[in-house]
Length: 475
Ligand code: HEM
Image 1 (spheres, rainbow, N blue to C red):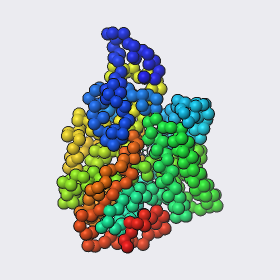
Image 2 (image 1 turned 30 degrees about the vertical axis):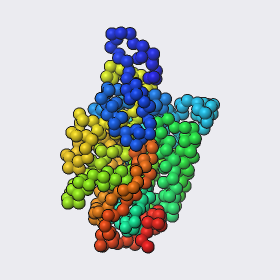
Image 3 (image 1 turned 180 degrees about the vertical axis):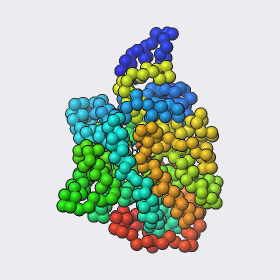
Image 4 (image 1 turned 30 degrees about the horizontal axis):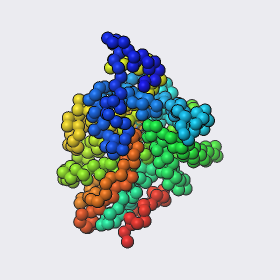
């Protein structure tokens, strides 16, 4: 039932303007978050979208309004009446079997909430604008251009390590390790710090497991907190070393961390906790999303062979293809907002504090916005997909992601034009409602690998920190 004045919404007298909220369980005749949904959410999204613009579900964090139509998702992401401050909900969880004492449960999670609530994705104006400005200044387009050859080199190195004549797991060999490596390069993580990138991937998994669970268990929450605090300790040490070097008269370093430290000195980022929160979020956001784009995207292309062939014939289609893949099967399926002030939407009163889940994955398949929405068409003139969000919180890493994905798909096309998904394996989805991704993507070439192997350039140590599974290497 809706939070706040719930009785009035459900018990409105006949003829009242406020209509009875649609309930997801009633609309679907089943639980929303069942296994079939986690495997393929799109039929469920369609049913919800067709039932009405606003549906209530008690399966998201104890209760939330769901919006599924493109125009409504845009509205929720752009309109300041919907607040991005929503981490408090993680503490207000009902008692569960693992943690019957609610207060103890809340206290146990305070470290997690305190740190994450400072990350810009959870801030509203004016703090959001202040931090966003510092972050945007640290993410310069020129840096991405400078990074390009190193990304190409890193991808080539990883592909060269794979023997595609036998089945291999693309997730393990490339999609999982590469994005953490790339975000590490951009942020300026040192060579001696790059050992921790493997830990980052593991911490990130624990965080995603919690953040992406619409009704996380207490154990998931505690694991996420342990991971988050470990990530924070990692950055704390790194920032302390950088500050000490500056105090000893070293030149400020020209990388994202160097610029964020400068923003802290200038007062644009307020205090070490705020800086720490941005670093942790950047690493997590940069890794967890792109990995799924790489694996889901390649699988989608390979299971649509006519689209794969189109790309082979015309590489100029690559940028549009990546956008279409983001629309077709977005790695981020939803985001949340809290209602900041009572408001009316589609004949319902939404009360201050109500949670609204903006279903990006559903909006990207809205026929009112996209023709033939369930069809993959890499030649369509892309209406900007909502995959990166919109409004003040639109993704800061979009350009990096697009560049990375184009590089990966381009090199895979060059090297393995006859790549196929392994015919015997059903895709295993990670079963996370927020992050849509695969546990593994077994692939192999139908013929021999391309005659010219990708050369494996000599790499600086930071690029070799995460070597793929030795079993994938050429014997
Ligand atoms: C496939 C890749 C990616 C997808 C689908 C994606 C998706 C999104 C979405 C939907 C949002 C908006 C969330 C909201 O409004 O609540 C967002 C924000 C954000 N993303 Fe990404 N992202 C991707 C890659 C990245 C990368 C590579 C980075 C970092 C380098 C990154 C960093 C961020 C940050 C910092 C924000 C918060 C922006 C703000 O609050 O102003 N993302 N992303």
